[in-house]
Image (cartoon, rainbow, N blue to C red):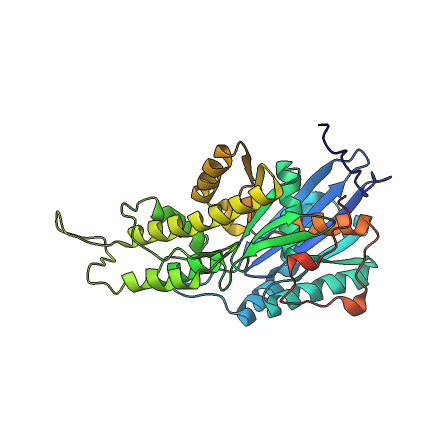
Length: 365
């Protein structure tokens, strides 16, 4: 049987180059990026600058302190981004900012900066969904055509597929996000927050030698992660636990590295399972991993084994684009802007709960 005719994209080639400035600050990373869409259909990343608010080991980041960090570094990061792009704000076609989801105070701080620049330089504003930004940047960088998207970050865990101008959520976490689960356990065992708790968990997991039993909680297409976090924390109170990893020969001990390894293996297996279900449902052979946890090489490896068994492949980006950044906001915002979308100043607000499936993806067929 002949294949279905491919639908033509409603996004037409631009008649002139379009340039957008993207501002991201939904959590502890403040980012500014500049992207250019050329008349030949190509997309160029002109700059991608980021500054991270890092707290001491054992501590998380509070909304008020994170917002203060963003206000303090905003102009420096934006100036650096424009200098690296070799342009001025006068040459920008639109200013894109993260509308949500995220932490309220940091979101509001960055939106205020975007609003101010919009008024000062008479540039249109475009509010962007943070999750859609991750997806569009991942598609652009990897070239994935119609993948099942696994979106894993500190605040979100979703399995997503595109249909009829909407990124539809097939499954998600029922409680905490996978990044939040890893970060919180990193604080329990006092791992540093530099460069990130999740990265340090990944490095410690590579030294683990023992897979400990933990709750495996998939519920249809959804997962639950709060129970596995509690169970992993409980092992730190076990009399066999050795935070210093010291033990006599042959002694039955549990090390922090064993716990990191066990937590990663169990959680990632759950994510691979629900992603495979989504692939079977829509008949896709592509998986795109986006979000900060998407940098994890073990997650990419496990997903690759599953996809390979199905005759498919995995797409992922490095930390420049996986971790929250301004360029992904610029990319998604410029696609919206080219379809005629703008955010009036009177509606340039933020919302902490802005679901991926609430956005009309007008630029895709």
